[in-house]
Image (cartoon, rainbow, N blue to C red; front, side, top):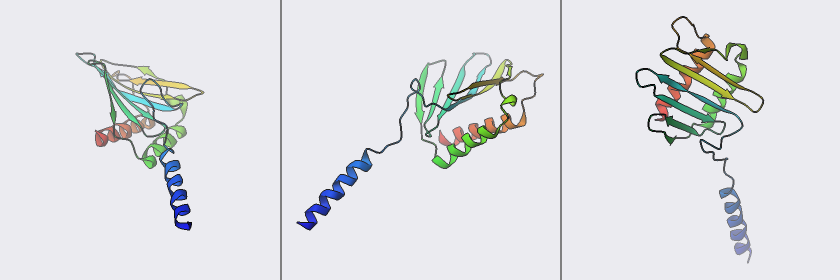
Length: 145
């Protein structure tokens, strides 16, 4: 009888744990805070957009084919570090709108504020904090693809 009770209790615990999942988002139903980044322009005007959610989900959207794909989830330690880094960047460094023929962008969306930064113009120098954050995100995407 005691063994049966332990088995039932263990089974209930497993069922509860199975239902404890992180939120799953879609490209249209996003988290409250996320980062959108990528590049576009050039001869075709194509735009590749990556979206990193605050739970580690990562999406890729290609404008020419209007296709979106889910990339492998980013490890918790990595995405937490990225979001913490952005929280430490002086927001006055963000928000530039200096696209060129070929442009790059980093959009940081939070419940209280959305900041879109675009650069690529030859006469504009992007702040080093923004550039290093963008390069880190792109490195992450290259390792996740």
